[in-house]
Every structure is written in C-alpha cells, then in structure tokens.
Amino acid sequence: MLVAFSIAPSGGAEGDSVHDAVAAAVRVVRESGLPNHTDAMFTTIEGEWDEVFDVIRRATDAVGAFGTRVSLVLKADIRPGHTGELTGKVERLERAIEAAERAD
Image 1 (cartoon, helix red, strand yellow):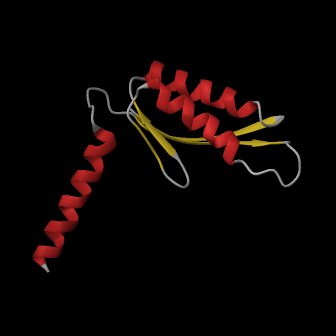
Image 2: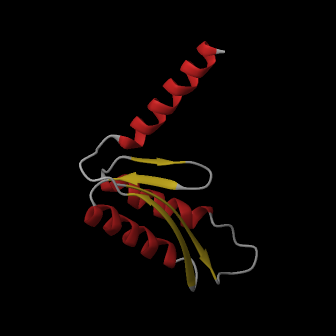
C-alpha cells in the first residue's frame, strides 16, 4: 500500500513555524527503512498495512511534542500484492506522457 500523509501541530506559540515538527516526523519515516518520498505537501510511504500505520502513528507522536493538537491528513492506495509502486506509478505516468507526445 501507499499512504500519502501530512502531519502538523497546532496549539503552539503564535508565529511558530512547523518545520521542526515536520522534520521530526520525516526523521521517523526515514528511520523506518520503508520506501518513502517527501515533497512540499506530503510524505508518501510504502509497505504493508501494519508497518505503514505504525510509522504514521510514531510520526504523529513525534509531531505531538510540538503542540497541544495534531492535524493528520491521509490518502491511501491499497493494492495487495503490489510493491515498488512509489516509483512504479510515476514511471508508468512518464511513459504515457512520452507516448502521447510522440503521437502528436
């Protein structure tokens, strides 16, 4: 499965940036050893249900140290029996774009 998620603290001091909290969450994800990708809006992680959600729980706990509330947004692609989709989906998209451009 792939899960894209975003975690942010709230209830901290006014004007606080969330980058330290996000860094703590991303550190948990990277230390998990699961395939992952972080961009400007989300971190995506790939693995089995229990291992992915364990990492997300621990990342959420890490962010919780930075405020009195935590916001968590999730989007999941649950496709049993498939691995390598973190990069595979993008590779298939790029091939489709290239094919469409050659057809023009």
